[in-house]
Image 1 (spheres, rainbow, N blue to C red):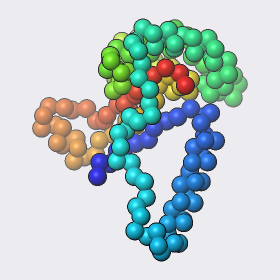
Image 2: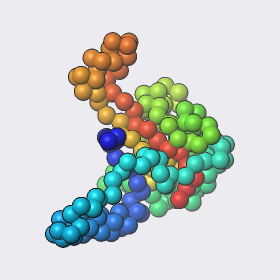
Image 3: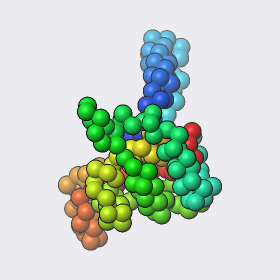
Length: 183
């Protein structure tokens, strides 16, 4: 009834749990298809809130302190996700903190949800390159400090034409993040 395009991006450390849940879901679907007496039962649906299971932050300052602590504790373990085959790359603590501060600035101050500044806006406010902003955002996701609730995407032609009528000439939507304490 209320479709939500996109996907939530979770840390790679939850993949084993997600695979187990996917296997159980597949088995449940197969059982319901094969068993005629359960044919009238409906499968669980995602009509609930898109934000279910995502914690809220206390305040932006505490969250930024948690970002710094997470960087100090987890960066060495997560660094291979940002580097190329020769070990070049990575993201600095300064970049992560500045990008996190801009994301926190545009989030709902009570919950830390609905943070959706575009990469271009973050570039303008921090002075970093597009790639550095993407790496810092990736660190926030992998460290469990941010969850991508709705993936950004380009608008379809029909959506763009409708938006042009109200004066919005952008080509797409930015990803929506929920900023929360580390898991």
